[in-house]
Length: 628
Image 1 (tube, rainbow, N blue to C red):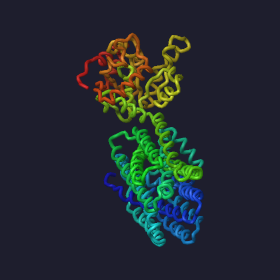
Image 2: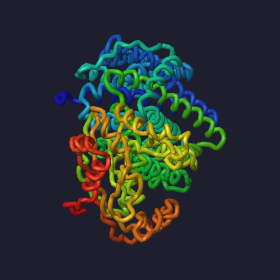
Image 3: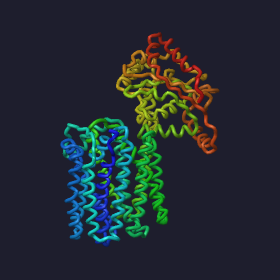
Image 4: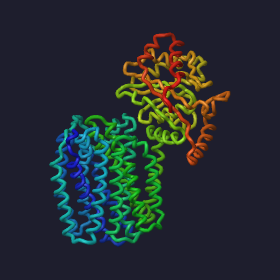
């Protein structure tokens, strides 16, 4: 797998994307030169863009069927052959000054691209394997955007500086180069025998019924669509914005778009490299908000062209970082040849968003003119970034971890105790109110389901939403355990945990059930941890966690008669966080030690309950040999 080169696949994709956008840009500039009214120009541009994306919505099921019947490589090459007569039809449209024929050729180009688009992305994993996935997708996306904007820039240059015969020659040349490159692609294909519906609506609902069973997959696909809505809106808007608002020529507008090409290409490639060792999807809210802020800056209306171009390049770089994690997550979440179908579904959803972008751009242009797209796209990106933060548990925990590390200097040992293919019963000591937040933040890459009394699910809307996002395990309200009606629920609590572990999920369980009153862990006669460990499923591992360094903090009970009020303490902590961050104050040292004690816990569970708890207490209260 590692010996196969990505270059042939990247080259094939590059020339295909270049030709798509070269044709579309020629159509927009040349046909717009035939139209005098500005509003009619916006309508035509939205129509041409819609003609390019509509086939992706209607024909993605056919693309899926072709990959099953003839394979991905054959589908890729057949589409490249079809590109040649489509370019001939487009040339005829330009020669005859027929806007309808040009739009039809753009539609056919979109049809051809839609049939091989899922294949080319599925081939990234077939060519390079899962170990080179982020790098391959980073380059694939980066070069796709380079091709998109190169086709746009090159066409804008030729409109002003070359004869029509040069335009037509380029359309044929790019098609031939893409076809030739497709015959150098080598891959080990994964094939899927399942037949999905060919009807686009039935296909959409059938595949959605499967994707919603994979945690976070539909959310990732949704945000991939939001990215493409933003990209399509920007591409359409900038063509007119440069001429109508900045007063530039077509070529000068192309130069500014070239900066965007460099920005988004380097952003995608850099994101692919960073994603090898870092949880890049955790940075999605930050990169999305940065991109939104730059859009608002671009839309202020008073920027000189040079400053506008620099800000646009930086925006494009941030947008590249925003997008790549979604592509990587889709290919990681979907196992085996089912990826072919899911990528066809992703194309369908993505281009639904791009079709919407054509409509919203045309509507915004009719109402507010050529500059409406910038604040519109900024508002959408800002709202989407905030929503993603509170919808994706990994991103939420990674963001929380980043913020907490500005206040605490956290040292973690033993994270490699997590084993692939096993469920984990994670049992920490409870030294302060904040340690569950710290621990959940450190496990940001892992779905770790905390046990939460059902009463908390009926609290304020935000808390209930966060608990649902964390996929918290709802357990009987322990404050009501004396009621006869709830006695059966409390008795069944250990079964809830055991069943959850048996399904392969990871559980966060505090054996003591309360924060420490004297700086040591006291479990007493508590039974939940004991009962669960006695019936531990075969695939489950037990990780004990010892946290030190939090006793004496505002979150602990040191010097207090009762546990700190979470809300009031949080407000105080936020104020101190700002102060300590701005003044570079020394952070509190915290040590989190993680150890796999599955065999020990199984042996201890043969002892009476108090002895089992005493063994746990001895481990939790043992002085650490590691200095944070």
